[in-house]
Length: 228
Ligand code: AP5
Image 1: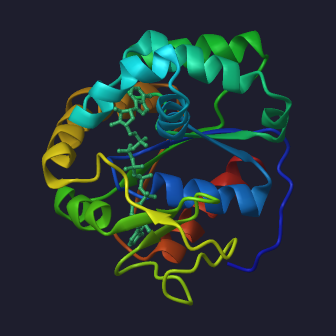
Image 2: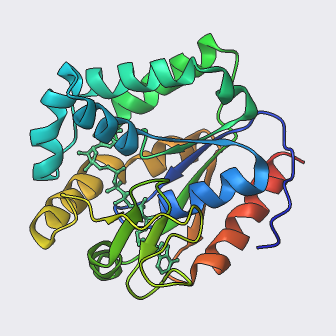
């Protein structure tokens, strides 16, 4: 990618896709390219767990088992985050909504803010690829930049390209057992959302088995065309 920032107003994008599809990776690239803000409910929940809040305590066991945290908790966390002023730059929803009640709640939250969804973009990847992507994933504990043992290696081993940090971590739910439950939750509860957004004329499906930059180019073309 060329590193230039393209202002696009205040779009609302949804990234759909199974665990490990590349939602977080692509959301961070979209942030850089278009100056929008990534809202990851997974990150917000992990922050609540780390902070030891009541919501975090309730969420932890469910996340460790690979299930979906209750809608009440996730919607409340997202509502608070949407109220922060930086979201006026436009948002990329990464990991939300994950079922029909959450999609309906999102429609209401956006209507209250006189906003609407520009595009729901589904990253299409085979299940077998998910396990490879998730089992090789690690992140910089200091800035959150994501890496992969095979597919995205820092230029200097063990040192974050983005911030120079050396504390790399792996997520507790990135193990073979939990990945199976997460994929099951995705197929049963999240995949049907494609129908929800297709019916509203907002759905875009893109092949996401190729390399990170190829997928990014497809996504950026959609974002640019929806804002034209
Ligand atoms: P969450 O944090 O949202 O996890 P997830 O959906 O399982 O998605 P991941 O973060 O694992 O994957 P990703 O698609 O972002 O992939 P990434 O870019 O890292 O949710 C965690 C848990 O929180 C859930 O299980 C649930 O319990 C709870 N939760 C969250 N939201 C909720 C909600 N709305 N309702 C209820 N519960 C909720 O990529 C993976 C790896 O692959 C990386 O290492 C990357 O470098 C590499 N990679 C990416 N793209 C490519 C590519 N094109 N080619 C090769 N490698 C690639």
